[in-house]
Image (tube, rainbow, N blue to C red):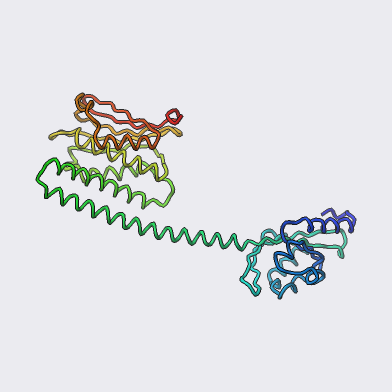
Length: 341
């Protein structure tokens, strides 16, 4: 406050500030006695004006304001040695402790006897309790999620084991083939679940994600790794967990399809999974150098894998294109801002 201002004018201005304050506030003299208080202070701390005016701050209530560190800080503020900004303290009375945030400003009127201290108070008890409750809930959620992931992993392993046992017992080659397909899909989902469970970040880095997924698919479906290989080329893109699940399932279906159809007999070859993004636009492709896509097969009714890829692409606002011929087949899933529009 302007030190050249007339003391009465400055004093009245300070009282006006108190009267209009939405936060509890006190005007203290050089001895830290209360000159005036805001109405919000009386309501917040259940005190009457006659029990506050003229009394030292540290005598208010049942003495709960008499905190040694607060005494020291207010003394430092009066001596112009420091300002009190957002000082937190616990006010311990007969009821539960209240968490307060204090700010103090010295109002110098130009005379030693006219020194005043404006003390504003903010009760953040509920905010701190809410924050603690939120932290507790997050910790509990993390524990429950870890338990859920553990149960899911166990369940997927059990399902995969049952499918393999069933495949060994059946006589029909067609049924055995369907059971093997189901086993591969369950194992790929298990890999997705393990990868996402291991990630503690909100986003998933796709290069490592696809690499681990393809390693799992290769381990379960490729008998001779010198004959057929799967490679991943991807940039450093990261996506959120929901998008990564959809992309991972698309890669699973396309790689499984290539392993089943691209290399009949003893044919050797390579499958390449590629992902690159430019801003919001991205392209995921799975290509092989196998026998290609015969016209009769291309014109045939889409199978389960193709339907799954189409559905997942629609969820991602992406389009699917297939380039077949001899040799090789490439299936591309692309997302552009234009396709969004």
